[in-house]
Each structure stands twice: as C-alpha cells, then as structure tokens.
Image (tube, rainbow over all chains, first blue to last red):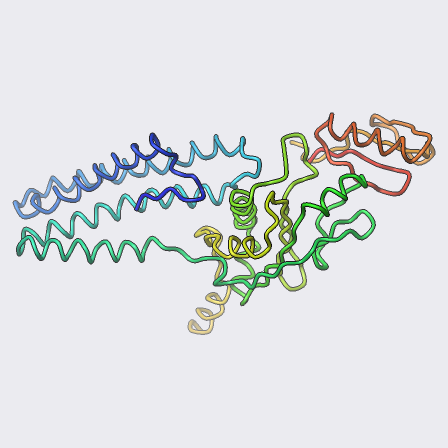
Amino acid sequence: MLRTDYRQYPTYLHGKIIHVALGFIAAGLGTVAVPAILEEEFTAITFLTLAASQFREVRNMERNTLTELDSYELVSRGKTYIEGVAIAFESRNYLVIFTSLVSTLGYLMFNIWVGIIAAVVAVLISKSLMSGGKLKEIVDIQFVEPRFDGVGLYVDNIYMMNIGLPVRQAEILRYGMGFILKPKDFNSRSTIANLGQRQAILHDVSTALGVYRDSGTPALVPLAKRDLDDGRIAVFVLPQERDAERAIEIIGDVPILENAIRMPSEKKKTKKGGE
Amino acid sequence: MDLEKYILAIITTNPKKVPAGAAVFHCDTKEEMENITANLEAILDGIAHALSDELYVIVKH
C-alpha cells in the first residue's frame, strides 16, 4: 500500500510516518462504523463524514507540498501529475476504511476466519483498484536519434526547438535521446496530447535516468512535442545514462494520469444510442 | 498580463538587420558573435536562438 519507489515519494521516514498514522486512523474509523450500526447508533455514521473531510485535507496537503517542491525540481512533475498523486493518497485512505469495514463486518457477523477471508478479499480488490494503466498499453515507443536541420532540433520529423549555438548543438547531440510515441488508437491520441501527461513522461525519465541539466541552462530542457498530423508525440530527453532500451521501458511504465485520460470515441457511441 | 517569452538581447554581425528596443551587441566576426552569445546565454538564463547566420537572439522562456 505505502510504497516508496523511483518517484521517491512519500519521502523516507517522516513522510511515511504521516501516512501510516493517517492509514491507522482510517482503519480505526472503518472498524468502529460496523459495531455502531449494529448497535443502532446511527449518529456514529456522522463520524464517517468527518473522516471524509479529513482525507480531503490529506489531498490538499499532498497537493500543496508537491506544488511547493515542484519549483525546485530540475524537471518538474507538472500539475496534472501532482493532482494524480494527491487523488491517489485520498482514495487509498478510503480503501483502508473499506478494508477494515469489510473485515470487521465479517468478524462480527460470522467469526474471525470469515473476517480474515473478507480482509484478504478486500485487500485484493484494493490492489486491483490501485493499479492504474501504464503508458505502454496505449502507445508504441520507438527510439530515434535526434538530429539538427540547420538550427532546428528534430526528433524524427517533429520540430522541437531552435538551438542557436554550435557548442550547445554538439552537447545536445551527444547527450540527447529522442523517442517517438505512436498512439495505438484515437482515444490514446488525445490522452498523450495532454501537456500534464507529457510532463509526467519527462519527469519520470529524468528521475530514473538522471538529467544532463542545471539551473541556468534552459537550452538543455527535455521536451515533448506533438505531430499535429497524426498525434504522435516526440519526446526529447537528456539523460545521464544513455540506455535506449531502459528508457523505452521507463517511458512504457509511466502511469497514465487519471486526469489526462480522454475518450472521444465514447462520445460518438452515446450520440448514436441517443438518436 | 504576464509576458511568457521575451527577447533579452540581440547579437549580430550585421547592424542593418537589428531593430531598436532591445539590448543589441554588435560583433565583427561570427566567432565573436558566438562567444558573446554563449556568455550572454549563461548570464541571462535564456536560450540562444539563431534567426540567421548573422543574427542571434537570447529569449527568456
């Protein structure tokens, strides 16, 4: 449930303690709810609303912290990614309530074994609810060497930016890597077009492979640009470790941000059904 | 209204091509122009863009 991975979030020790404590409170609330209902103490349910507002506060807290920190990242996470993380924290607290509620119900209605089984089932359900989609499910990723056409930097045929100085151009050719993300269908085309989703890709790649950049070198900035004709996304990064295969793997593992998902094809369907 | 991008400096070897209204650096040779551009890029935290062989601008993004 609480896992510190390559994103390095929640931060080790103190950030973790906060979330473990909140998880404990959530579990307590879920447990108390069932006996309260059984005792026909319905007013106790109002505590759950209190819990809900408490966990909304968690979401605010995460959002504020991450937004504050984001300005000091070499490659920022972006607002969409931050919102995704904040939502995940809130919803996971509700999953904790749900799990404890179901297991207490099992224990009180039947016996401890049913309680344990109910807990295991609830954890499995939570696990499946927690795992979002990965980018490799919606795009094909391909490595392309970036190139210069005059002063214009290109990845495949997608124009990235104008780099004037020959020294800077040489630097970019030496460290830069380009990737083409080809959407598998029309829905994913809109999803990866989202600027927040693109920033998330750049952030994840830069976190995992390092970034050849410092403050005051805005020319060495990772970029993601879109081909207007077919919706392909060109990703240009400057990793410290030039390993194309690993980079493709990392891009493939970037989570699809909930707030970036678009389903234009659903719109067509409902229209047909409505007529 | 906030301006998101603006020209911080213009570096050129051809004085005829340069508009007024920004800091302009006239240079005699291409090498000198590239040197000054590289320095200004670092100093101003902007990106050096080439508009032509004799005209560079530093833009804040």
